[in-house]
Length: 536
Image 1 (cartoon, rainbow, N blue to C red):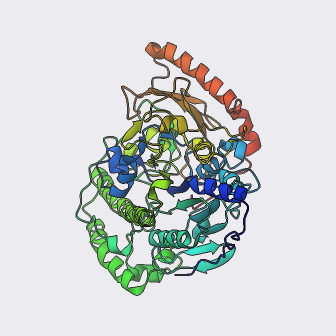
Image 2 (cartoon, rainbow, N blue to C red):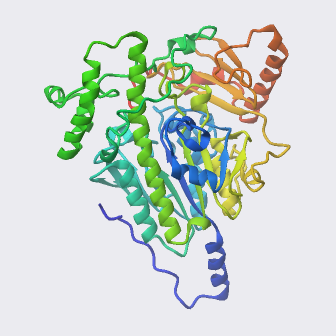
Image 3 (cartoon, rainbow, N blue to C red):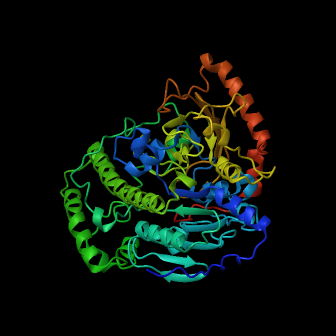
């Protein structure tokens, strides 16, 4: 393992004034922060959210010893944009990172910069995916392979400007680096670490110890796996993210033998396969031989083939999460051993949710519940009562002001999110003056997966969506009676009053967040055709 290439300044000299000594004591009392984020992890795959697919005991521990937020939403369900919103506390149209073809303006205000200025020691380890080099961090070590998506095996990193390659599995390596950093940090300062895993991002490559662990497991299918999109608009019908048609035989389903990959070494699967040590390649070949044989038996077709593909997708996706949960356990154990666990705000989240076969899909992007909704569990026993649950409507732009609030740092007036601290301090109860809706705006079209541009609001019981640009289509869902979002009630007479109410609330929300003319603003934000952009 490469040693961390940073040096810390020596501790303050002994002969300090009483004033300086008191200040140092005050700083020690401020909470540490570990912001844990994965890529494409959804609440359906967390047992603390009632997921039936696998157990996540260490994620559950954070929820059980803290709070579980049941209504937290991404404001733009795509990796780079979500990360920009989290860093800045501002919506995509304000922070400028609207889609994955954007480049983050690192000169703008971010919460790590504000914490750093207030005396926090800041770091980010793992996935960055914002193209420009990180700013506002005393130490950073980010994945660089595959246009900053990172590789699962023997990954490349940029460590404080130096390109390095580490041997091993990315999820484990990122945790090794996090613990090593904490070992060598300046103990006189509080710290804020952003601990970002690549997993469970596509193409879902499990750790060597987990290869084949679910080969004989049959996972329950979602009720909407064979959705026909009846009654909904063109966006749902014209997407390109279906398990049936979009999952590729090589990259996604891994239906190539070693001999076949060696015949075409330009194949994308081979490019990641060759990063594995020989013994791992041998295990990989053995584990996937069963899958390849089943597929080539010629017995799979129609719905049976879709169900089979779904099972293979789940086996790989969920196995990558097992490693994430194990490593969260390692980090919690380290904090416990060093006596910092209860003095550290621990957040676990993902950059957005993900489709696990719902509506026949994988991926994200849509404002539909499975990917707009994101996990958010927080542990900090000095302020949060264990076992708390909240149905307050939260958004990822709220993370920045929340952390600043807990750290005792003034929240700048231009931050658009709201601090969740009043909710966290009060066992999850929703303040009377709390927001009534989450706002959403997705921009990346035309592009990979062909999800049309849209914006909308999500209230406690309803969702209103406008698809625009090459279409003009509205959808509205009664979530209480239709949680799977199958019945578009926008034009139904019995919902006329509710539609009027939601349209008015949408306009108010857009005005509040300064996105009051999104249909016109898109002409300024987009130039050219992004359909050829890859590595989402």
